[in-house]
Length: 253
Image 1 (tube, rainbow, N blue to C red):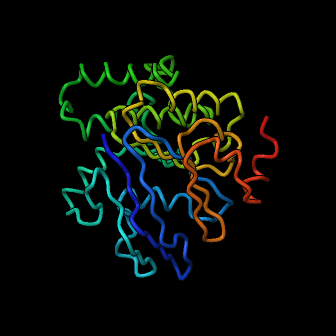
Image 2: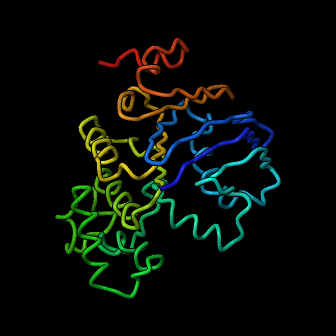
Protein backbone atom coordinates (compact mmCIF):
# COMPACT_ATOMS: atom_id res chain seq x y z
CA UNK A 1 0.00 0.00 0.00
CA UNK A 2 1.18 3.53 -0.73
CA UNK A 3 0.73 6.96 0.74
CA UNK A 4 0.70 10.05 -1.48
CA UNK A 5 2.30 13.17 -0.02
CA UNK A 6 2.78 16.65 -1.47
CA UNK A 7 5.45 18.70 0.31
CA UNK A 8 5.35 22.45 -0.37
CA UNK A 9 4.64 21.90 -4.07
CA UNK A 10 4.59 24.89 -6.41
CA UNK A 11 3.91 24.30 -10.12
CA UNK A 12 4.28 26.91 -12.83
CA UNK A 13 3.37 26.11 -16.45
CA UNK A 14 3.85 28.69 -19.18
CA UNK A 15 4.18 31.49 -16.67
CA UNK A 16 0.97 30.58 -14.82
CA UNK A 17 1.01 29.24 -11.27
CA UNK A 18 -1.39 26.31 -10.84
CA UNK A 19 -0.20 25.26 -7.37
CA UNK A 20 1.55 27.39 -4.78
CA UNK A 21 3.17 25.84 -1.71
CA UNK A 22 0.69 22.96 -1.51
CA UNK A 23 1.09 20.28 1.18
CA UNK A 24 -1.17 17.34 2.04
CA UNK A 25 -0.96 13.60 2.70
CA UNK A 26 -3.25 10.80 1.58
CA UNK A 27 -2.91 7.65 3.65
CA UNK A 28 -2.92 4.23 2.01
CA UNK A 29 -6.45 3.33 0.97
CA UNK A 30 -7.76 6.90 1.25
CA UNK A 31 -9.59 8.66 -1.56
CA UNK A 32 -9.52 12.26 -2.79
CA UNK A 33 -11.72 14.10 -5.27
CA UNK A 34 -9.97 17.07 -6.89
CA UNK A 35 -12.29 19.67 -8.32
CA UNK A 36 -12.43 23.23 -9.55
CA UNK A 37 -13.49 25.25 -12.60
CA UNK A 38 -12.18 24.47 -16.13
CA UNK A 39 -8.52 25.31 -16.62
CA UNK A 40 -7.66 25.30 -12.92
CA UNK A 41 -5.07 22.51 -13.24
CA UNK A 42 -6.90 19.48 -11.81
CA UNK A 43 -5.25 17.06 -14.25
CA UNK A 44 -1.81 18.47 -13.46
CA UNK A 45 -2.14 17.24 -9.87
CA UNK A 46 -2.48 13.68 -11.17
CA UNK A 47 0.43 14.13 -13.54
CA UNK A 48 2.59 15.23 -10.62
CA UNK A 49 1.87 11.88 -8.93
CA UNK A 50 3.00 10.16 -12.15
CA UNK A 51 6.25 12.13 -12.24
CA UNK A 52 5.05 14.65 -14.86
CA UNK A 53 5.42 12.28 -17.84
CA UNK A 54 6.39 14.18 -20.98
CA UNK A 55 6.79 17.45 -19.07
CA UNK A 56 9.98 17.11 -17.05
CA UNK A 57 12.18 18.46 -19.86
CA UNK A 58 9.73 21.17 -20.91
CA UNK A 59 11.30 24.60 -20.38
CA UNK A 60 7.82 26.05 -19.76
CA UNK A 61 7.37 23.85 -16.67
CA UNK A 62 8.89 24.81 -13.31
CA UNK A 63 8.40 22.73 -10.19
CA UNK A 64 9.38 23.31 -6.56
CA UNK A 65 8.81 21.04 -3.56
CA UNK A 66 8.37 17.29 -3.68
CA UNK A 67 5.85 14.52 -4.29
CA UNK A 68 6.37 11.28 -2.37
CA UNK A 69 4.83 7.87 -3.02
CA UNK A 70 5.22 5.55 -0.07
CA UNK A 71 7.78 7.96 1.38
CA UNK A 72 9.94 7.93 -1.78
CA UNK A 73 10.37 11.04 -3.92
CA UNK A 74 8.93 10.65 -7.41
CA UNK A 75 11.56 13.05 -8.72
CA UNK A 76 14.56 11.14 -7.37
CA UNK A 77 13.67 8.07 -9.44
CA UNK A 78 15.76 7.01 -12.41
CA UNK A 79 14.16 5.73 -15.61
CA UNK A 80 13.79 2.19 -14.23
CA UNK A 81 12.30 3.58 -11.03
CA UNK A 82 9.73 5.58 -13.01
CA UNK A 83 8.73 2.45 -14.93
CA UNK A 84 8.24 0.60 -11.64
CA UNK A 85 6.25 3.53 -10.26
CA UNK A 86 3.84 3.42 -13.16
CA UNK A 87 3.27 -0.28 -12.55
CA UNK A 88 2.14 0.63 -9.03
CA UNK A 89 -0.01 3.52 -10.24
CA UNK A 90 -3.01 2.70 -12.41
CA UNK A 91 -4.44 5.57 -14.44
CA UNK A 92 -7.60 6.39 -16.34
CA UNK A 93 -6.75 9.52 -18.29
CA UNK A 94 -9.52 9.33 -20.88
CA UNK A 95 -11.05 7.07 -23.49
CA UNK A 96 -8.32 8.15 -25.90
CA UNK A 97 -6.18 5.55 -24.14
CA UNK A 98 -8.10 2.83 -25.97
CA UNK A 99 -6.53 1.31 -29.07
CA UNK A 100 -8.99 1.70 -31.93
CA UNK A 101 -8.04 -1.41 -33.88
CA UNK A 102 -8.15 -3.75 -30.87
CA UNK A 103 -11.27 -5.40 -29.47
CA UNK A 104 -12.40 -5.13 -25.86
CA UNK A 105 -10.45 -8.21 -24.75
CA UNK A 106 -7.16 -6.94 -26.18
CA UNK A 107 -7.67 -3.43 -24.81
CA UNK A 108 -8.22 -4.75 -21.29
CA UNK A 109 -5.30 -7.16 -21.48
CA UNK A 110 -2.69 -4.64 -22.71
CA UNK A 111 -1.31 -3.86 -19.26
CA UNK A 112 -1.17 -7.54 -18.33
CA UNK A 113 0.51 -8.45 -21.62
CA UNK A 114 3.32 -5.91 -21.31
CA UNK A 115 3.72 -5.22 -17.60
CA UNK A 116 2.59 -8.24 -15.58
CA UNK A 117 5.00 -10.83 -14.17
CA UNK A 118 2.51 -13.31 -15.66
CA UNK A 119 2.71 -11.76 -19.14
CA UNK A 120 3.53 -15.12 -20.74
CA UNK A 121 0.69 -16.96 -19.00
CA UNK A 122 -2.28 -16.75 -21.36
CA UNK A 123 -4.49 -18.63 -18.92
CA UNK A 124 -3.81 -16.09 -16.18
CA UNK A 125 -4.40 -13.16 -18.53
CA UNK A 126 -7.71 -14.63 -19.70
CA UNK A 127 -8.85 -15.24 -16.11
CA UNK A 128 -7.78 -11.80 -14.87
CA UNK A 129 -9.47 -10.03 -17.79
CA UNK A 130 -12.73 -11.80 -16.98
CA UNK A 131 -12.38 -10.87 -13.30
CA UNK A 132 -11.93 -7.14 -13.90
CA UNK A 133 -14.52 -7.05 -16.70
CA UNK A 134 -17.06 -8.65 -14.38
CA UNK A 135 -16.06 -6.22 -11.62
CA UNK A 136 -16.85 -3.15 -13.76
CA UNK A 137 -19.92 -4.71 -15.39
CA UNK A 138 -18.76 -5.35 -18.95
CA UNK A 139 -18.21 -9.11 -18.94
CA UNK A 140 -20.83 -9.43 -21.69
CA UNK A 141 -18.53 -7.49 -24.06
CA UNK A 142 -15.75 -10.09 -23.89
CA UNK A 143 -15.43 -12.40 -26.86
CA UNK A 144 -17.70 -10.23 -29.02
CA UNK A 145 -14.93 -8.74 -31.17
CA UNK A 146 -16.31 -5.26 -30.50
CA UNK A 147 -13.85 -2.39 -30.84
CA UNK A 148 -14.01 1.04 -29.13
CA UNK A 149 -15.93 2.57 -32.04
CA UNK A 150 -18.79 0.13 -31.35
CA UNK A 151 -19.09 1.06 -27.65
CA UNK A 152 -21.00 3.80 -25.90
CA UNK A 153 -19.19 6.27 -23.66
CA UNK A 154 -19.86 4.44 -20.41
CA UNK A 155 -18.64 1.15 -21.88
CA UNK A 156 -15.42 2.80 -23.09
CA UNK A 157 -14.79 4.25 -19.65
CA UNK A 158 -15.29 0.83 -18.10
CA UNK A 159 -12.84 -0.80 -20.52
CA UNK A 160 -10.12 1.71 -19.56
CA UNK A 161 -10.96 1.28 -15.88
CA UNK A 162 -10.81 -2.52 -16.16
CA UNK A 163 -7.36 -2.26 -17.74
CA UNK A 164 -6.15 0.03 -14.94
CA UNK A 165 -7.47 -2.35 -12.29
CA UNK A 166 -6.02 -5.45 -13.93
CA UNK A 167 -2.56 -4.97 -12.35
CA UNK A 168 -4.07 -4.45 -8.87
CA UNK A 169 -2.47 -1.00 -8.44
CA UNK A 170 -1.57 0.56 -5.11
CA UNK A 171 -2.78 3.94 -6.40
CA UNK A 172 -5.33 4.73 -9.10
CA UNK A 173 -5.66 8.11 -10.82
CA UNK A 174 -8.92 8.96 -12.59
CA UNK A 175 -9.07 12.08 -14.72
CA UNK A 176 -12.62 13.38 -15.18
CA UNK A 177 -14.04 9.87 -15.42
CA UNK A 178 -17.53 11.20 -14.63
CA UNK A 179 -17.60 13.54 -17.64
CA UNK A 180 -20.19 12.94 -20.35
CA UNK A 181 -22.30 10.32 -18.56
CA UNK A 182 -25.61 10.53 -16.72
CA UNK A 183 -26.25 10.37 -12.98
CA UNK A 184 -27.08 6.65 -13.05
CA UNK A 185 -23.73 5.75 -14.62
CA UNK A 186 -21.83 8.19 -12.39
CA UNK A 187 -23.28 6.42 -9.37
CA UNK A 188 -22.31 3.08 -10.89
CA UNK A 189 -18.70 4.20 -11.35
CA UNK A 190 -18.52 5.68 -7.86
CA UNK A 191 -19.90 2.42 -6.50
CA UNK A 192 -17.05 0.52 -8.15
CA UNK A 193 -14.45 2.98 -6.86
CA UNK A 194 -15.68 2.79 -3.28
CA UNK A 195 -16.06 -1.00 -3.04
CA UNK A 196 -14.36 -2.81 -0.17
CA UNK A 197 -12.10 -4.69 -2.58
CA UNK A 198 -10.43 -1.34 -3.40
CA UNK A 199 -9.92 -0.41 0.24
CA UNK A 200 -6.17 -1.09 -0.10
CA UNK A 201 -5.87 1.28 -3.06
CA UNK A 202 -5.32 5.04 -2.76
CA UNK A 203 -7.70 6.77 -5.19
CA UNK A 204 -7.44 10.27 -6.69
CA UNK A 205 -10.18 11.52 -9.01
CA UNK A 206 -10.65 14.83 -10.81
CA UNK A 207 -14.04 16.26 -11.68
CA UNK A 208 -15.59 19.59 -12.59
CA UNK A 209 -18.89 18.43 -11.04
CA UNK A 210 -18.32 18.59 -7.31
CA UNK A 211 -21.94 17.80 -6.41
CA UNK A 212 -21.70 14.36 -8.04
CA UNK A 213 -18.93 13.18 -5.69
CA UNK A 214 -19.68 15.23 -2.58
CA UNK A 215 -20.35 12.24 -0.33
CA UNK A 216 -18.25 9.55 -2.01
CA UNK A 217 -14.66 10.31 -0.98
CA UNK A 218 -12.66 10.57 2.22
CA UNK A 219 -11.14 13.96 1.33
CA UNK A 220 -11.39 16.75 -1.22
CA UNK A 221 -9.19 19.34 -2.89
CA UNK A 222 -10.57 22.43 -4.59
CA UNK A 223 -8.44 24.41 -7.05
CA UNK A 224 -9.68 27.91 -7.89
CA UNK A 225 -7.75 30.98 -9.08
CA UNK A 226 -4.46 29.47 -7.94
CA UNK A 227 -5.79 28.67 -4.47
CA UNK A 228 -5.79 25.11 -3.13
CA UNK A 229 -8.32 24.14 -0.48
CA UNK A 230 -7.68 20.77 1.17
CA UNK A 231 -10.84 19.50 2.87
CA UNK A 232 -10.46 16.50 5.14
CA UNK A 233 -13.92 14.92 4.85
CA UNK A 234 -17.37 15.28 3.30
CA UNK A 235 -18.86 16.88 6.41
CA UNK A 236 -16.30 19.69 6.26
CA UNK A 237 -16.95 20.02 2.53
CA UNK A 238 -20.68 20.47 3.03
CA UNK A 239 -20.03 23.15 5.67
CA UNK A 240 -17.37 25.03 3.66
CA UNK A 241 -18.24 28.70 3.02
CA UNK A 242 -16.11 29.17 -0.13
CA UNK A 243 -18.41 30.80 -2.74
CA UNK A 244 -17.42 28.48 -5.61
CA UNK A 245 -17.97 25.38 -3.46
CA UNK A 246 -21.32 26.67 -2.22
CA UNK A 247 -22.45 27.34 -5.78
CA UNK A 248 -21.40 23.85 -6.88
CA UNK A 249 -23.24 22.23 -4.00
CA UNK A 250 -26.41 24.32 -4.33
CA UNK A 251 -28.24 21.59 -6.25
CA UNK A 252 -27.10 18.79 -3.97
CA UNK A 253 -30.08 16.80 -2.68
